[in-house]
Amino acid sequence: EAQVTQNPRYLITVTGKKLTVTCSQNMNHEYMSWYRQDPGLGLRQIYYSMNVEVTDKGDVPEGYKVSRKEKRNFPLILESPSPNQTSLYFCASSLGRGITDTQYFGPGTRLTVL
Amino acid sequence: GQQVMQIPQYQHVQEGEDFTTYCNSSTTLSNIQWYKQRPGGHPVFLIQLVKSGEVKKQKRLTFQFGEAKKNSSLHITATQTTDVGTYFCAGPNYGGSQGNLIFGKGTKLSVKP
Image (cartoon, rainbow over the protein chains, first blue to last red):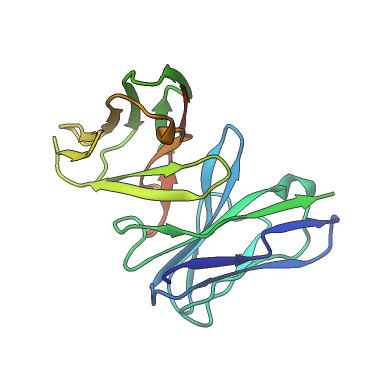
């Protein structure tokens, strides 16, 4: 089944404790992206990757890191999480450029930083 | 910077009534996408519009792209409870880099049976 998977689905952590949210897709998509969703603010793009070893900032990249060593995986790293990073995070992928192709979203990761 | 505005923010309708959400961009867009997110779910792609004045239909849903390619609308005829969710529009962020996508804040639709 074609899908985007994220792990973990739920995470409660404390300020400053490094964490990684994994994202994997099995559709051989080139484009992958991370979004955060907050009430009243909609979806905001954090980082995206056009292909392996190619990443770029979205609208809210501060406090986040990403890497794209393999086509299928696009982990989101929070080196020193803070409470303002408490949010619902979605990973997405698309075949071509995300801005012109259908994006397939993962199920989401709900992160709480205490 | 570039903005994508959606109105209304919330819409409550009686089942069977029509519903429309509007999306307005501060800049001309090459294309616009629409997504639906069910409560507790993830965004799901509905459609992409590319041409000026384009109108596309999916059963009870009608999507329109404005002539100036700065606005778009989604109209649902005779809403059903299965239409409940938040509808987002999204377009390229020309103020950002090549793959930067900007979403509207969404319109949350509730349908009373």
